[in-house]
Every structure is written in C-alpha cells, then in structure tokens.
Amino acid sequence: MKRATRIMLERPAAPARVRGKTFVVTGAGSGLGRASAEALLRAGGQVVGIVRDETQVRPTRSTLSSAGGGRADVLAADLASRSQVEALAEDAVRRYPEIHGLIHCAGLRLPDRTMGPDGTELMFAVEVLAPFLLTLRLLEPLRQGEPGRVVLVAGEEHRRGLLGPPRLDPANLEAERTFSPIAHARHLTLARILLAQELARRLHGSGVPVFAVAPGPTWTGRFRHYPWHRRLLEQAQLFVRRAQPVEVGAQRVVQAAVDPELAGSSGGYLVEGREVVPSPPARDLEAARLIWKKAEEILGERFLPTEATPP
Ligand SMILES: NC(=O)c1ccc[n+]([C@@H]2O[C@H](COP(=O)([O-])OP(=O)(O)OC[C@H]3O[C@@H](n4cnc5c(N)ncnc54)[C@H](OP(=O)(O)O)[C@@H]3O)[C@@H](O)[C@H]2O)c1
Image 1 (cartoon, helix red, strand yellow):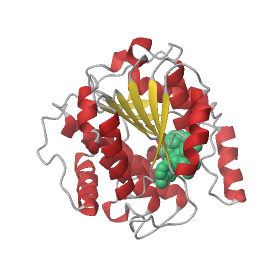
Image 2 (cartoon, rainbow, N blue to C red):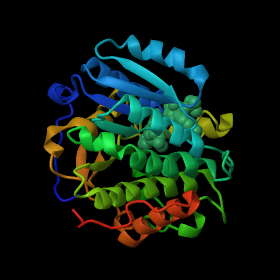
Image 3 (cartoon, rainbow, N blue to C red):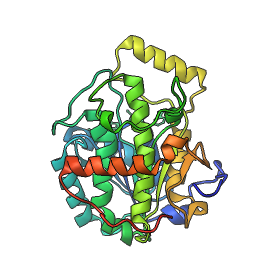
C-alpha cells in the first residue's frame, strides 16, 4: 500500500524463498490454486494443498506430484464448515511446525443465494470467514516460518459499479437483503481486500505479512456453477478482457507469496504484478473493522482484540 513496486513478472519464483519451504494453498484442486501449487512445487517448495472433500485428495495429489520438484501433501476440508476448518488447522499445526506461506485461493461463484452447512451464506463462508479463521488458527506455524506470508486472492471487481466503486454494506455481507451474483461477488472481493488489510494491521508486530492480490482475468472453471447462458456471458467477457492462461495468473499469486521485493511490507494490494492503491471503499478502516467484528460474531469468539500499531 505504501510504495508502488513493479514486480518483474518474468523472474522465476525466488528459489531461495521456495526451495524446502512449506506453503499451504486452498482451492488446490483446480484453477489458480492448483496452478499456484504446481508453480511452487516446480520451484522446489513443499505444498500442502487443501481440497473440499476426501474424493479429491488422491487425484489432486497425483496431479500435483506430476509437477515435479518438491513434495505435495493434500488435505481435505469443506471450508464452509467451521468444524472442518478447525480440524484442518489442528492437523496442519501438528504436521507443519513452520509454514512459509498461506495462499487463500478457494472461492466460488454461485447463481443463487445458498446457505452453507453452518447456516452462513456459502460464498461469504468460503471467501471471507474461512480465510479469517484459518489464518488465525495457523498463526503459530506462520510465525515460525521466517515468518510466513498470507495471501488472499482477490480481484479488481471492487472498483466497478454503476455509481462508482461500491462501499461495504455490513448489513448485506451474506446477501441478506439483496442478492445478485455479480454484486455479491464484487462485494466479497472488496471484503477480502479489507480483510487482508485488517489482518495486516492486527498481525503487525507478529512479523506475519498479509497481502491481497488481483491476478487479472484468468481462464479457469470458476463459473461452472452458473447456468450455461450466464457462463457463456462470463466467458465472452473474459475473452474481451483478454484473459490470461492460468499459469500467468498463478505466477502473480505466487509472487505475492515469495517476492523478496515485498520483504518488510504488509497490507499491500497487488494488481497484475504491481503494488497499487485500491479504491477508496477498499481502504476504509471502519469497514475493515466491521468485517472483523462480523466474523467474530458469527464464530462467537474474539480474535487478537488488541490492535497493534498500524503498519
Ligand atoms: N479466475 C479469475 O479470473 C479470477 C480473477 C480474480 C480473482 N479470482 C479469485 O481467485 C480465486 C480462485 O478462483 P479460480 O478462478 O481459480 O476458480 P476455481 O477454479 O473455481 O477454484 C476455486 C477452488 O475453490 C474450491 N472451493 C470452493 N468451495 C470450497 C469449499 N467449501 N471448501 C474447500 N474448497 C472450496 C473449489 O473446489 P471445488 O472444485 O471442489 O468446488 C476450487 O478448487 C477465487 O477467490 C476467485 O474469486 C479469480
């Protein structure tokens, strides 16, 4: 956030920061998560890929292992379920005393408002609540990982809106009042950028840096839950916006996790390899606190109540 850094996209993923290091990647079964995991493995990292259920463990392990390089472990957890996130975190803390990067790639686009297993709106549960809880539960191994960086994959959608960049609506975070697939996805993108900043503020002093990254329009199957006509429309837009291959998007995600030029900073927002200032609503301190409060209310627990000095 503080400085505009041009990240050299063509630079190979900083081998010294990857080789032999442990990276937890959610959404590792497909799209940006899988391609990021593969890039880290090729650079010699150890990847702990998180997939939604047990049926995906073996095929994902076999796909990731064929990338070569480092070791791939795959664990299953439905990130919309608090008990499964807690069990995953407990397991990960036991197995991996040092985590050098935690990359939140899991996400989903749904055509209708859908409730998750705990009664929380599903997209909010996966894209905001899960990264919140998983990051805080993995804090100790992240602290030990030199410390490890946290990366939330977001997007530039938060800048778009009929009347300019929309502000956070704390009363509609779960689309309680109105739901439109596009508006909700935009709203949650904004929420993820704000969450990254609030995590960065509260983790200041722990040494654990947090970044949000917009990889740019990327060809993945993320609209697969949409009906065919809406999917076609989204794909046409990706075509018009010259969407990039998934490997390029993943390279940008991985750079946020390992680029040495980002050392010493936290709370930044990276767009297509460049650190930029997000829209004014995505810099709203009060809105970021409200997300934290909402997550605490849903989980019935307080986390890092004492704010450290902002970075
Ligand atoms: N592609 C783009 O152009 C783009 C641009 C900017 C930002 N992003 C963001 O990047 C992230 C990854 O998107 P993508 O394009 O790679 O989409 P994707 O291929 O659909 O990947 C999303 C992954 O999240 C997993 N997931 C969904 N719900 C889950 C749950 N309850 N528990 C565990 N895992 C779950 C999915 O697993 P299942 O297959 O089992 O459902 C899938 O592997 C998303 O947050 C997206 O908003 C994407």
